[in-house]
Length: 218
Image (cartoon, rainbow, N blue to C red; front, side):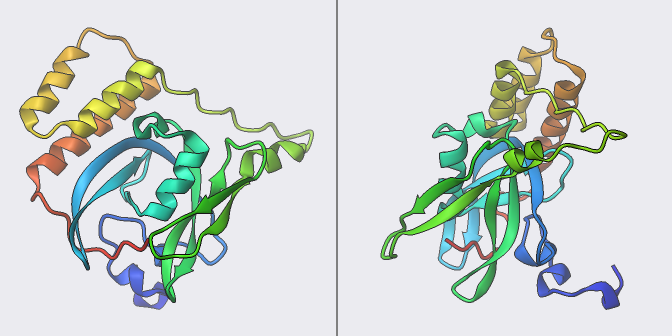
């Protein structure tokens, strides 16, 4: 990236996670969840366990602060591994006068959803999860165009295997998961997702146990 094109500080230090400065001021980036895992991350307050999301076709991941975690829970339920296969949009917002990543909504919602955020020592506030799917359905495409087909939902077994890979702590654990599914059949999309998840988790296990320091706002 040429220096003349760098417009935000975050672009100088992209790291492994999505950061607010990597998004345009009005950008709504839609992401499809392929992995939900728990990691130890180094923060300003020391090493903390955080949920980390991985996405289809993206190299950047998203560590979950409490606010974003509550928004995802209200849209997709209390069981994090069942978020795999769901889509949501992120955007650039502000927290304590600093840029941060927030959840905008989901193409899967058919109506806006108000979510109350309650944090320790903070006054509760409400965030709206926007029904991006509802807005898209309301507008009819021109006669010469056809809407792109929706990606098929992942089977429960594929979602389960993705979660098992994310939970693997050693290469031996990961190899055991791969061996268990060696005789099972998945569709082309699921096979590609599983291959990428296996390669990504292998790399993560081989790397140092602690991720680089990142500021993760509430």
